[in-house]
Image 1 (cartoon, rainbow, N blue to C red):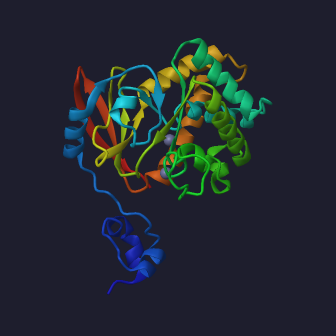
Image 2: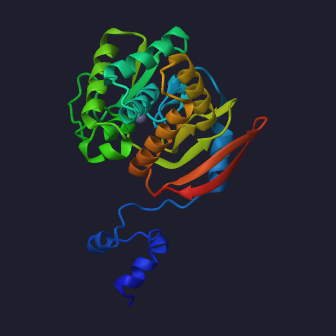
Image 3: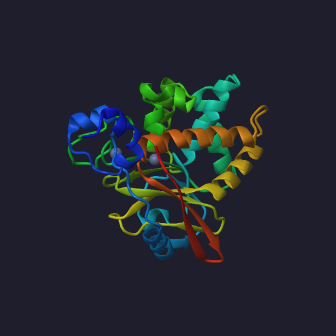
Amino acid sequence: MNTLRQLKEELPLINKIHIKQLRLRRILGVNDTIVPADVEGTLAYVKKNTVPAKEGRKCVDGRYTSKTSRGMLARAGGDCGYVMALMAINNKKKLGMTPEQCFNIVYKVIQQRMHGPFCIHTDHHVDPETGKEHTNIHKTIIGCGHLSKAANQKFREKYDVANKDMKKVIAYVRNLAEINNNIDMVNLEGDHKEQGVLLIDSEEYTVSATDLHKMYFIYDKARDENFMRKLVKVMDIPGVTFEDMQEESDKQLQVTLHLLAKGLPLYHVTYTYKTPKVEYITTII
Ligand SMILES: [Zn+2]
Ligand SMILES: [Zn+2]
């Protein structure tokens, strides 16, 4: 019989085993099952679902279906993720903008430069299709985890934004989306079944899900950084640099992955021409 101390020392290994006793799980701090890395399976999936990159953004959420989002740039929170990063910089550097002003600045750049509609999403847990009972199982204000976690009091420090400011901006976008066709509020269906996180380093290709039983969180890192570079340049706010945006974005993404993708393997995806390569990097803790 192992002592508790021994068990704790062996936690990385134990984490991989499904511990059934609730009491033991609690003592050991085992909350999530660790999904073992599957490089071959993931490579096969990436090969099958690789599509050319195209204009438009979406969230890292794995529940997008290919018909609505094929090839779009996937980044946490979609366009509202850029607003959230700007809000964090605004806080830190005391730039004096309101959450609504932060939204307006990002929105205007996207409109003026014709990057398509401003993208944000919710899900059926929070916004059931009309006629269905409103369950809101998450007791949250929007179905995008990146935005709703930042609006939750428990997590505000980690995201560098005040939760009340996130609530304000979400309410503001929701209102605008009702009357403005340039705001695309996608309503995702189904439950999270992501089995890994794909960090894609390509400007030409991305991965688009076709099978909602096998899904991944998708982050188009290279394209996101390019887009942020352009965004910062056109926004032209004194004191806001690309490096600031990148730092806050990375930080906010890490918090969201920690909260939503704990226990999942993170893979790095690169392409040589159209041939993908998949490497396992780490498991999200
Ligand atoms: Zn949900
Ligand atoms: Zn989302």
